[in-house]
Length: 174
Image 1 (cartoon, helix red, strand yellow):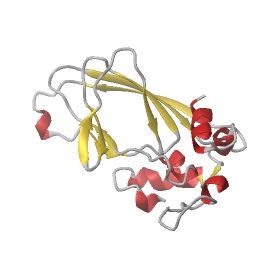
Image 2 (cartoon, one colour; image 1 turned 90 degrees about the vertical axis):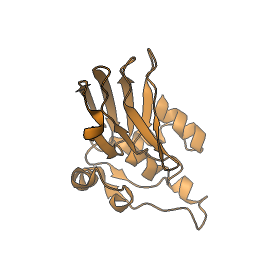
Image 3 (spheres, helix red, strand yellow; image 1 turned 45 degrees about the horizontal axis):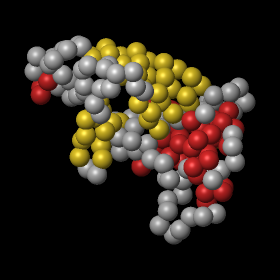
Image 4 (cartoon, rainbow, N blue to C red; image 1 turned 90 degrees about the horizontal axis):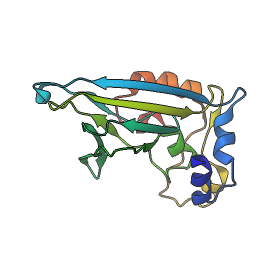
């Protein structure tokens, strides 16, 4: 549903993003459960360093009492407040490439907190390993000279590159 809503908003045919993610064996799914214990001196550690997510769409069920998630907006770190029974939707690098930058993957981090244990569950919907990722042709037709064009690549190749560069600027990965 989320992929189709993104397609509709971009003027792409329904199902375009699903097809782009499919590869020969279908998309990849994964879930990561994280536990961030309280830290008596949070200013002395980095927490989870700033990064963008490599994949497609990430659904994050974050702790509803203990904060810590931040995103970078206009050069400043902003808290993503915990909200009871809510899911944070994060777009990854592959959405940025396919949309030719119309949607951006967001730099985010988790900072340590002293006021309690923070739990989160992130579910990832990523392209298949052998899916070729590139900007949607319909979005390239409308581009201006200032609009970046991203390369075509195999998702598995991107993941090999990403593993060594995760905590660095995302632009060199493209």
